[in-house]
Amino acid sequence: MNVFSKNEKFILAAIFFILFTAVFGTRTFRLYHSNAIVSEIPAELLLYERTNLEELAEKLDSLNIDINHEEMRWAGNTLGWRFFRPGRYVIDGSYSYSVILPNLARGIQDPGRVMILPGTDIGRFSRSLSNQLRADSTAFHQIFSDSSDIALEFGLTGEELFSRMLPDSYDMYWTSSPENTVRRLYREFQRLVAQRYESEIEEHFLDLDEIIILASIVEMEARVNDEKPRISGLYINRLNSNMRLQADPTVIYALGERRRLLFEDYQVDHPYNTYQISGLPPGPITNPSLSSIRAVLFPEEHEYLFMVATPEGSHHFSRTFQEHREASEEWRRWIREQYRIRDMREAEEMREREENQ
Image (cartoon, rainbow, N blue to C red; front, top):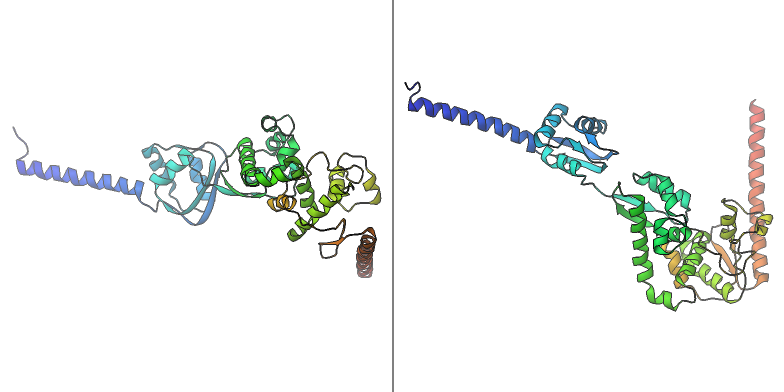
């Protein structure tokens, strides 16, 4: 016995189709509509470890990103994206679940700008990178030991490898390992220095290692970029005249602390103290910038042999020792005046505190 007529069967089928289409359309819209996750301003999502849906929802919520927790959990389970990889992700604008969840699950990160500063040391360099990347500073520090695999691979000492960490800003992934980061920076040095200036290096009277050593001294000596070629030329004049470099930055490096040097500091017995040794020190004292390296490759030609700091932060250059003595005396007078002003200010502040007691 046929319960339903043909017309009734047709109507039932049409109703079922409409209901199925409505349900399917609603589900599809919820999964694919572009306003599922919204951030009105750029937000940086950092996932330090493998993260599940609930944890992801909490992190997004903490960044003031507009989400529906229950709907996102449903979408993740429906699409099969339940766990998400460590990384740095920039959430900026509106996204559908079908776009953002797979990206997070596959670890498709957004690169960030990593700054490498000149004139630093291994400790500060390591701490700076650990603050910019998901890496431990100790791991970076160990790479710059003489026995590290990367230093041995490149045939360099730890200090020589560090001196090739070319200062600049680089696009890197937050989860880049210390090893990959150092290799990337070393490749940039090779490309921008060793390869670009290959002919200039071959024609120079210093080899590449010595060029980097001298550039590291220029980096620490120069406060004004425009002076770097002149300072480089002065040091080269001293080398060609068999004079000692007498570079204050090498004394500071030998002491292991940055401060105003005292007379006895220049007497310290250390292989990097260029007041006590002849020629270049045995290694670089920092990671020089490209401008300092270029200053050594293309030094200013002049007859200067002496220089002394000026109150403006630049240098006064002299050809003779007598000229240098006169300029040095002017510098010392200025220093004494600064101390006098400081002492007067401190005395005045002390009097004011005593009067107010």
